[in-house]
Image (cartoon, rainbow, N blue to C red; front, top):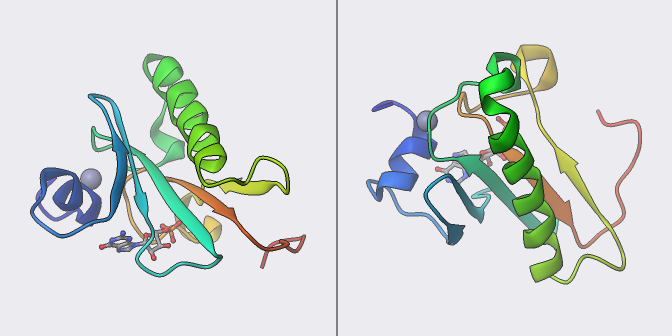
Length: 114
Ligand code: 5GP
Ligand code: ZN
């Protein structure tokens, strides 16, 4: 989608710190990190949000989560732990309408989230 910042990042139209990519998913550092490690994992295909996924995305969703876990391990977070978040819609605090999984770590997280 031409107006989508993550589609632009994946196509190389804008600069991005891409850590991993294959034909289905990509992972890159968040431009405004909320923790010492803050990575976003996204499908290459433009899917607006978690509210839009269904059975056809079953394996893709698995791949997104597995990639999130692999990125967390790659950043050395497996012992101390980390948090995986999918903000969805207005109440969920979603600001970019291209499905993304946040991987946050390197500090203790509070609960409940704000
Ligand atoms: P959301 O608020 O939708 O859950 O998360 C969107 C995230 O995308 C935010 O954490 C924001 O910092 C990040 N973000 C927005 N624009 C860009 C960009 O151009 N490049 C990168 N790497 N991250 C971005
Ligand atoms: Zn997009």
